[in-house]
Length: 107
Image 1 (tube, rainbow, N blue to C red):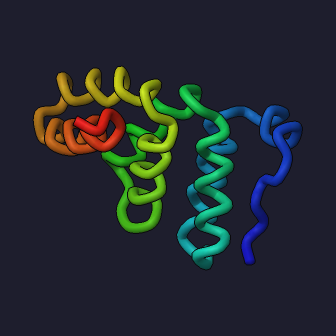
Image 2: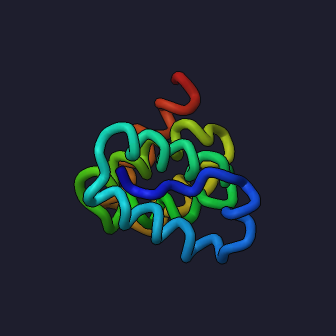
C-alpha cells in the first residue's frame, strides 16, 4: 500500500501544490483503499485545492481525473466558482463543469 499523508500537521508543513502533486502521482499505482485515503486527504484541503483539482481534471486521465472530480464534488459549494471560471475560458470544459456543478448543487 502506498504511503498516504495521515496527519493535518504533515500536510500543512508542505507546499500545497507539491503535496497535491505527490498525492496524485501516488494514484497511478495505488490500490482502492489507498485511492480512497488519498481522496480523503485531498478533500481535507477544501477550497484551497479547488483550482488545482480543476486543472487536474483538464490534464489528467484515469484515476487521477476521477479522484479530482470526486474531490471537487465532496468539497462542494467552494468548488463552483473555479469550475465556472474555467468553463468560461475553455468551452470544451464547459460540459464537465456543468455536470460537476449539478452534482454539487443537486439541480
